[in-house]
Image 1 (cartoon, one colour):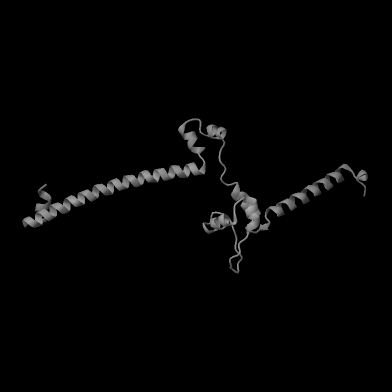
Image 2 (image 1 turned 90 degrees about the vertical axis):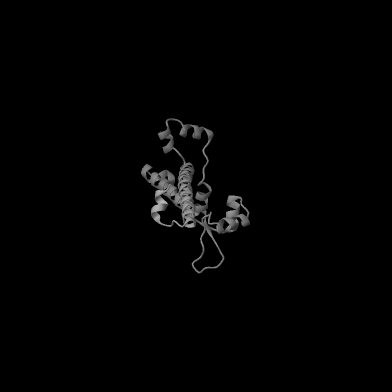
Length: 164
């Protein structure tokens, strides 16, 4: 059938069919399985670096069910991994960090929130260390008092705690 003989609705159907077909082929290509050479070309990393990332489990990879040393990748997962750590531009940073303190808290990136959590944990750990140090010094003081009373022959607990 000639294109000239088609009605407008038939032409729309043909065009929609072509777009659907091309988009479904594009999505199939994105999830294609690739090997380490192709990952090296895609990322620009050397194969040794990719193997290191695999060992550290920092890059998404797959292994066949039967085991072995062969690994493979999905191109869409590698694409997502490459784009996962986006750095804000200076303009975005200034826009996201304006306003009051509460507003800024909600606009923090996940890495900034994680850093803030680590700082809070570090402060909490420091406070616990201070408390432990205080208790340790009190225990040492009590032990020295106990040793003093034992050498004097006064080992009763009444003498230990009544004579400060």
